[in-house]
Image: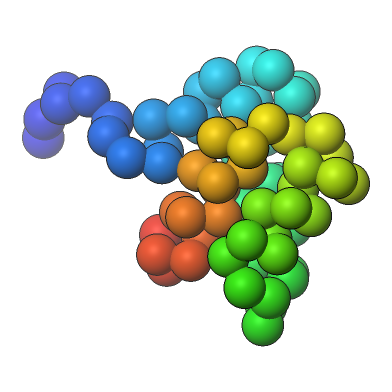
Length: 69
């Protein structure tokens, strides 16, 4: 087991939870439910419907689309 720092999109997750007040799994589940939508369509949905910033929205979508949920 390693204590290596989290890298990639998941490194945003603690700050997303703190800033937006929802568990990261809730965000991941919402984005997964948008099956069939393109990456940027999902990012724009998070931004317009939930007020996420671009970087945070992109991190969530990238994680889901990489199949890491």
